[in-house]
Image 1: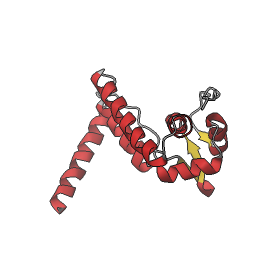
Image 2 (image 1 turned 60 degrees about the vertical axis):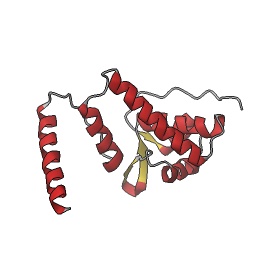
Image 3 (image 1 turned 45 degrees about the horizontal axis):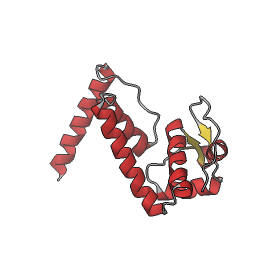
Image 4 (image 1 turned 90 degrees about the horizontal axis):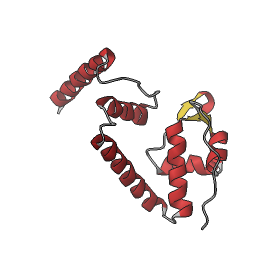
Length: 145
């Protein structure tokens, strides 16, 4: 199958499902289905359950599209390959010194709570406070078990 050329992604913070549909060459109902199948894909939802995707999610959708449509993966195969690619990418960034503790906090906050991404450097006072709070939460949780 021949790869289709997709439009460049504009420099915006959030994209509607219609915009993502056009940017990725995938119909909106397919995007909603993929949200159920790929746990990494979690657009922010606002009033009326409207979805707002961030740039990294648009890139992930393009990657999913490539795996399914261009490389011929099944949904399960694409899900496994995506997890593998994300892990390899993270390892490469960490080995190259491009990944800080803030990136891991960033990923956790974005993935699990659909909150805006944090922009913290490792020396930031807010990061130190967050680390302390997370440590206290971990200690409390370990006491419960």
